[in-house]
Image 1 (tube, one colour):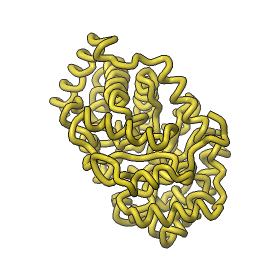
Image 2 (image 1 turned 30 degrees about the vertical axis):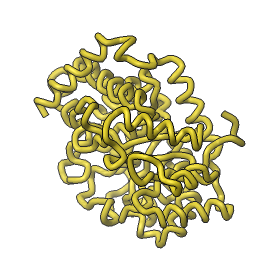
Image 3 (image 1 turned 180 degrees about the vertical axis):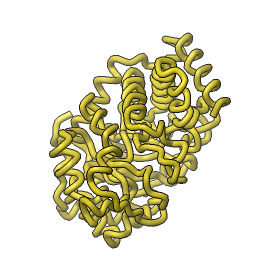
Image 4 (image 1 turned 45 degrees about the vertical axis):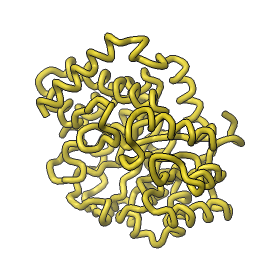
Length: 350
C-alpha cells in the first residue's frame, strides 16, 4: 500500500448490525481510516461477516478492529469461543511459565483466527499494564503484577496474533495500572517520579524491541513528564515512546470521547491535540456528532504525520494474512479444538 493510498487517521464506529447511508458516507470519507465494532454491531458470525464485507465494499483498505481482550472485554460472544481474562494467564505463569506461554500463544491465535473469519483485522490487545491491585477499570485485564511476566506473556500473545494473520496493540502506554480513577469517566493523575514510571513502561519497551505493530496511549496525566495526558502529549509520544524507546509503529490514541480526553477541551481541540502529539489513529466512538467534528478538523488540514505508518500497518497485516491459514476450522481443526480446550480450562480457573 503506498503512502498516497493510506487511510486517514479517524477510527469511527457504525450505528448497528448493518450499514446506514450515514455510515457509508463517513466510512468513504478520506479522513477515516478505520472502524471499531461493538457488541451492538453483532448478532452472529454470519451477520458480522456480512457487515465487515459491506464496510470493505465502501472502503477496501479500511482497518477493522474490536476491543477483544478476553474476560469482560470481549465484544462478540455467541458463536465465538469465550476467552478468559488475561489475569488467568498470569496466575498460570506463577505455577508453570512454559505452560502459560503456550496457552498465551494459543489463546491469541484462537481469538485472531475467529475474528479474521468474520472480517475483523485486529483485536486491540494485549493489555500490557501492570496489575497493582488498585485499578478496577484494568483489574483482571492485566496479565500480571511484574514487568517481566507481563512482557514475556504479551510478547508470546503478539506472536500468536501474527500466526493467525493479525497484529498486536499493546495498551495503555506508559501504564494505566497504578491509578484508581477510571479514564472513561475522568482524567486519572499519577504523581510518581519518572524513575518509578519506567517500571510501568518496561513491558512496552520489551515489546518494542521485539517489533510490536502498534501501541495505544493512556488517558492518564503523569505530572513528572507533562501536564497533558500521555495520549495527547508529544513529550510522551515523540519524546519518550518514539525518541527514547525507538518505536516506529502505529500509535493509537485512546477513545477521544472518554472523560480522560476531555481535559484538553472540546472535540475539535482533542482532535488537533491528538494529531499534534503524534497519534496515528484517533478513535472517536459512540458520538456521531463528535466524529463529524473530528472529520472536519482533519479535512481542514490539521497536521497528520501518520500516513506512512498507517500504510505500513496495512502492509504488515497483508503479509501476516498471506502466511496464515484462511480458515483454521478447515485447515487445522486439531489446533482449533486444542486451543478451545485451553480457553475453557483457564476460564473455569479464572
